[in-house]
Length: 234
Image (cartoon, rainbow, N blue to C red; front, side, top):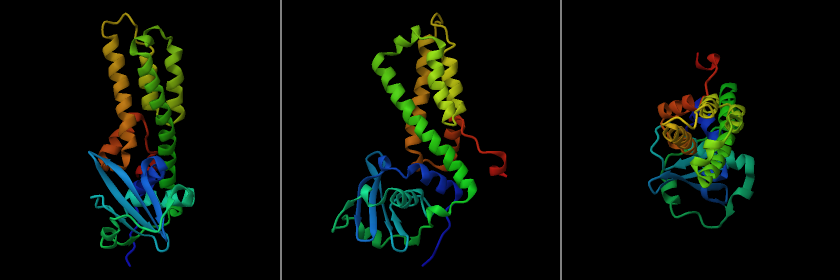
């Protein structure tokens, strides 16, 4: 049986996606775990990983193997155990496709190199920060955009600091600058709404990071401010 090494990018993204929120219909049947990951437009990626030998199946079209979805599912099982899966005696109806699909051993997620760990650490902090930003934006939407006109700059500074703590200086700077836009500016509403919309799109894009092509993911990371250290890109 062939073995393929996971790329650093795949391992880093798997760290971020190895959470229950990204997988649905999680089940374990014998020594195999199954799950589905929403892929947008009503589609899902169907993923299975053998706990005995690490072979996997994923219906995604990505050429890179093992894919981030299989790596993430295995890592989630390693971290969460059977409690995150529904035990069943009957595998899903798509198991036959899995049996006839790609059969490649998934490397042990614990075998990450230091480069992957550093990047995954930044992505992990960003994921937590973006969850807080989504809550903050949702609360702001309920209040109404106009209510921010009376807020002091320190109000914006609070969420900006949270983004900085989450290793996202790009978002931190964008939010901090919003506190400097005077309410008397004729384009106040346009500038505030436009920047907040960009922040929300960043949140949503990050939640779909497992489905983004690498160049687009790099653009997203550049927007929020995640930057690889010099020695990581040499």
